[in-house]
Image (cartoon, rainbow, N blue to C red; front, side):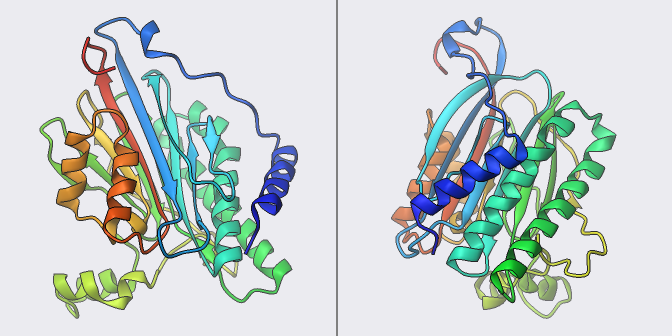
Length: 305
């Protein structure tokens, strides 16, 4: 297990190594004119009530990245112009290796951030695949240096721009979209043995939902040990207009909270829906680390900020 002090040292080293830059402060809502569209981003992570450490990680649009040993939550607003990039990661391979794998993945996405925000939409998949290969290599190097036989990380990344959300992923970290009508729909489909057996007709929906195979990943960062060229799964691009919201989460949320409860929490929470969702997972038992990012597309009124 990596201590908080060791984690801080590692991240300071990564910051120097990769040249991570400080980002300007997010605009305050008081400076946004009424009638202006904006994004409200909330995020939260917690180790849960059973695990001793948090093997999840996240990357928030060039502004912040999860820090070893911390249970973090925040909410800010951002104007809608340009491309915005968000990532969520769930490490695997034991406490120390899982933490490192998800952290290395977050750093790899941070390194790709400038390229992603400058890219045309048709270039994003290639850049995300480059990120996958970079993160895969970093994880394998870490495992080799530690003499570990296995490890890796899930990832889900969303690029938001020009009223469109583009999602890429590997593993069972999920992305949902809530439409302006309030309906919640999954954009990702878990890369697990349970889903593979469901697709093959070997499992029913209920069997897939409750089987141990739901945690057996079929794709993840770190799987490509032969360096043949790991690539991401790409979801169909969706319209992300006013009143829509994106939910990104690790399985610590979806194992504890139903899709119906997620949809209800988005409606009921007016300030930080990500924190509300993490709290709901903890209320339901918090058996795993839980991390959530919620991106809402809103318009400034007298009542919503």
